[in-house]
Each structure stands twice: as structure tokens, then as C-alpha cells.
Image (cartoon, rainbow, N blue to C red; front, side, top):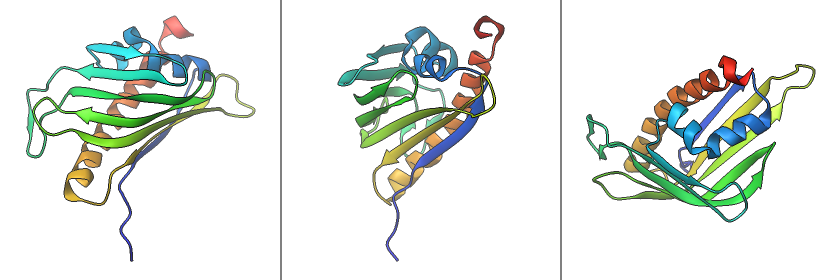
Length: 161
């Protein structure tokens, strides 16, 4: 049986319109709030830049050293009320070798019959079935779980209602 590359795949319902969710992935201020980015250059259009930076963490991972660093890639598909795709993405940890290339797919689907509720799917793919890639996806799966919960809290706060 052939091995399958690891992925990080998350879905959750958010009480927000799809356009507001997509905007939260491109607004540097929003990225600072929910994703704890210290800097972001994001261009919401096809062939736009997608670069997000985090401060190095105080905890050292056995494989990557401190986490944080920079995720960057190119927006190859962008639909303001539906989603986007960042391709040729790489993560540059503060002290270890880059991880990539990979893709980041973000999709929003308004739930039929329920006003104001959107199903968000975030899918990160790339790499192969090696210990380093599996470890990367173990880390990012945990990271996405917490970050997407923070995104939901951010978007469902009174200022967005």
C-alpha cells in the first residue's frame, strides 16, 4: 500500500458572512488579532503576495527549534466571498530549514437555510510521507485548531454583529 502525504484539514461553522471570513485572512490587523501575526503583507487578488510573520516562540521544538517565523506564498486563486488558494507556500522557521512547497486552501460556504452561518474549511497540503513532514503537520494541526477557534471568537465578537 502506498503511503499518503499528510495534510491538515479543518472545518468549522462561524456566525459571519463568507466575505468577512476571507477578509480576516487578508487584513494585517485581523491577522494580528486571531493568528497573532506580528507582520503581514497580503494581497487579496490572483498572483498576490501572501506573507505572514510570527515572533519566535520561547519553546523549542525538537525538530524545528523555536516556532514562529514566516509563511509565504502566492495567491493563485481569489474569490472574495468564496475562498482563496495560496500555492508554492513555504514556512521559514526562525532557526531551521524551510518547509515547503505546500498549498493553503481556504473555502467558505454559506449554510443553506441558516442566515449568517458559514462553513469554513482550511486545508493545508504538500510534502510527502516523511518524519519531518508528519511532524510539521502534527504541529500545524494543533496550531490551526487553536487559531481557527480564535478566528471564530474574533469574527463573532460584538463589533462584527
